[in-house]
Amino acid sequence: MLTNNSIPFVNIHSHNADVTDDICIYNCTDISEVELYFNRCSYGLHPWNVQSYQQIDTFCHELELLLQKRNLLCVGECGLDITKGIDFELQLYAFSKQVELAQRFNVPIIIHCVRAYYEIISILKKQRCTKPVIFHKFSGNSQIYSMCLKYDAYISLGPELCKHKSKHSVDFDFRLDRLLFETDTNSDVNISDVYNCFSEIYNIEFKQLKQQVYTNFLRVFQTK
Ligand SMILES: [Zn+2]
Image (tube, rainbow, N blue to C red; front, side):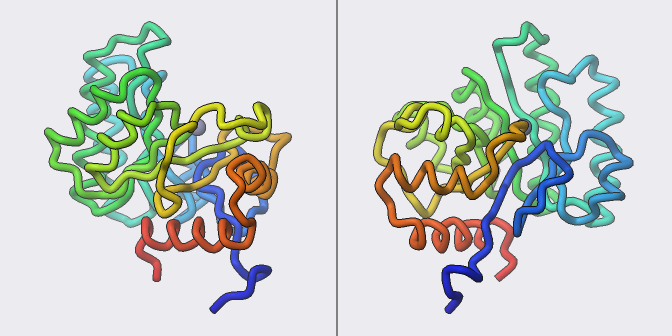
């Protein structure tokens, strides 16, 4: 059994390559970074960046080669976002293809979802997704949460906890064994702050929380 000090902090999603957290999955922004951050990064086509069917096909072909080489821990962030005015059919196509690849190569998926949870879930259903899906910066309600849990779903919360100091985004009963943390694009809040804020807001003992999140991480990545 690990002592509390030796239990690592886990940062499941960061855009900052310089963080020195115990365990951190860096979201690579281009293919050269994937080589550099070998085996501790995620890589995917973000819904804000989809442009054309051809671009998506080319991207997914490159992604497939990386997955064949086993250079990636997970696919993502990918997903759907209706707030940016980006062609939704293209977003659906890109997300479907990436779920299909994650499924085929047996890796988890980090999902960016803004006001499109039903559409995300419908694609997971169509693709018969059995891989872990991590909803980063989760903002759904309890009904959406229950629908997500029909899949191997986790929610990841981040610096918003510290900004709002309240049960701002998740104010319903949720499962601690389905929880992860992240710093995302934030650089002034570190991962231990996120743990601390969560522990205070939800009144969960820090040590128990740290152990639980680490256990969740091991389950998602099957590194036990
Ligand atoms: Zn992100």
